[in-house]
Image (cartoon, rainbow, N blue to C red):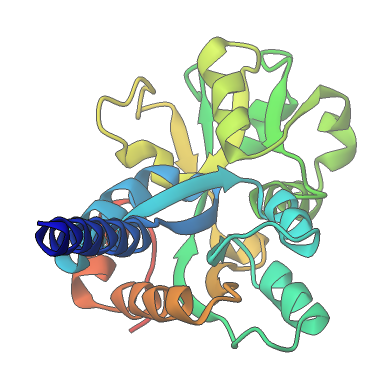
Length: 260
C-alpha cells in the first residue's frame, strides 16, 4: 500500500510539473511583441498588427508617442522590441549609440497636410496669415518629425515670422489632432493618414495636401531594438511582414507612399 501511495504521489507530482511547464511555455508564447511607433501611425498599425497577429499568432502591444519621446525612452532602457520612427533621424541616433542594433528599414513615407475647421477660401499661405486664423497647431518640432516638417515649410513659404505667434504645439501628431478636433486651434498641420481613419469626424473639404518640395521627406523607418534572441526572431518576422505586399496595400490605404 505504501508503494502504491508513493507511486500515486509521484504521478501527481509529475503531472503537476508538466502543467506548470506547459503554462510557462504558453506564457512565453503569449508574451506580446512591444511595438513603439510614431503617433501618426496609430490607426494604420492597428490594422497592420491585426493582420500580422492573424498570420503568425504573435501577439502585439502597441505604444505610440512622438518619435523623439520614444527615442529618449529607448535610450533610457525602455524594453521596446521594435521602434518605428516618422523620420530617419531618430533610428540613426539610436544606432550610433547602440552598435548592436541592426540597420533600419524604410517602411513608408508620410505626407503632410493642413486641415482647417474653417473653409479655405484662398491660398494656404494667405489663409494662415489672415485674421480668420487665430491659432495654428503643429506637433512639437523638437521631438516630432511632422512638427519639424511643418516648421520647415512655414519658413520655405516665407510666412513663419507672420504666424509664429499663432502657433500652438502638440506633443505629437495625436495631440495636435485633438487640438483641431476640439476647436482649440483653427488650423493644424498633421499627417495625411488622418483622413483615412474610419468614422473620421474631420470635414475632408477643409484640407490641403502640402507640396512635398517644401519639406524634407518623412521617411518612416523601422529598427529592431530587442535584446532578447527569442523576441528578436519575432521582431524579424514583423519587419519582414512590413515589407510584404499585404502590408504595403494597407499603408497605401492610409495615404502613405511605400518603397517599391
